[in-house]
Image 1: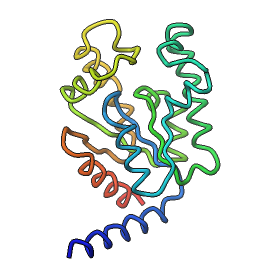
Image 2: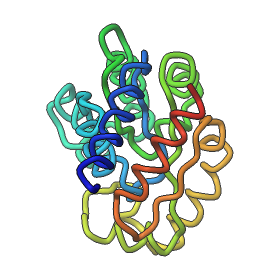
Image 3: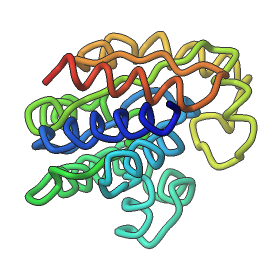
Length: 191
């Protein structure tokens, strides 16, 4: 019985993957799980996974904190926009892209994602974001001040932009499988 259910689920996912003709782009706050969920989603669908932040660092040959420190946030956002536009280009239809937390706030980047991709807003409550971002010390916007206060302010400011994504999925402290199920349901409804 269990094998038949797994086989049916695999067939459902394969059928869904065959209908997707553009990149899936995960947007949302830092720490929401775009990279970790994105890797699992890509694996499930048989798609490639790309982390935009990794691509930005490779293109700049600098870490994101170094880019912020050397050139500032405006320079970083312009490079981020160009990298995401490249990632959204030809051949990206079977790809999951994880973006940085501020990427979807840039009007040109957001328009490109909405026009050429399937934008999914991964969302979490502030407590979850504070806990998850405490695991890494490589987030330039969290370096100067109270982490909770900064995350709360950024989440409030960015919500208006994130809400323009057609699919909204809450990512809590439960298993990633729960979030993946919600994403697949969202994509099915969007298609």
